[in-house]
Length: 366
Image (cartoon, helix red, strand yellow):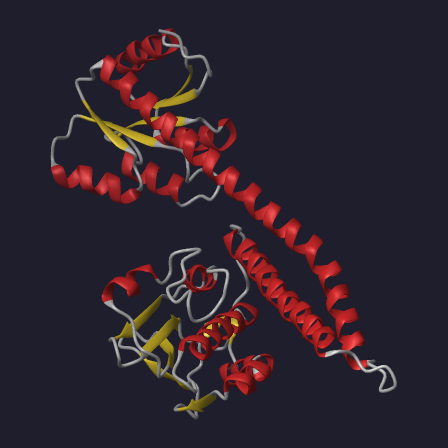
């Protein structure tokens, strides 16, 4: 029963007899097998050998298997290695503790070797699929970022020339109404493409595993910047934004991302609100000290079913009322969760909607 990929396993057990039999069986099954006889040696061996999976005894001299698992899972370089506990303990509490520490599975002694092989193979396959998925996500993020950057520069040129043509129309050769309409449509479509590109770039940035440095946010300033961006939209739909909060609580976050969150919530409110749209924005401190920021609109409200679909990528509920690419609220959710908060909506049909996001409070001294 060979194992074609030559995956590396680490057996951690202080009883030589147990190790010898398991070593022979797994080696004959096609694995490369390493051994550590106590917890400290196991941790050192994992750091330089990087096994694909660890079979870890619970009861050992020195640090036990639970402590070994805790240390490995707290280390960025080793946290993703699957760990299967080997134990004679039958107490459910001990098993729960292992799973809480991040263990993938349990094998109960006396060991049934065919069972060991089945569990090891299953978890190795799951781990490989997870790594493949992570790799594919990174490739997709890189592709989105590359495409977005490649489109952004020529699109800005198109918009620039369109503006020049609209501004430089000579009175002695007046453009026809059709000419002006065509240029305006080009400008409108170009701006929509810019919005899609910005969404792709933001999504690629959020999806990366890299963390961002957070700071205390000047939320009033951020919202005012968004208002300036949305000024043409506000004018066209005769929209109004009312502030119910004068002193904004100090929250912790990353300003460029939060600006996009507000831009998404406010533009959606203007698109899907009443006629004309009236938006109210504010903030309040929650019982857990997190800060909730919100936008209330005067639109038709949402059914319970519609609310469950809101943060699904590429989903738009009101396709008859406004156009869009459906990425917005999905990105908002990813942004806020990355910053340690959550998103949500409170709505009843015919009573408007309140969209909110939460952020941690500002750290002292930040």
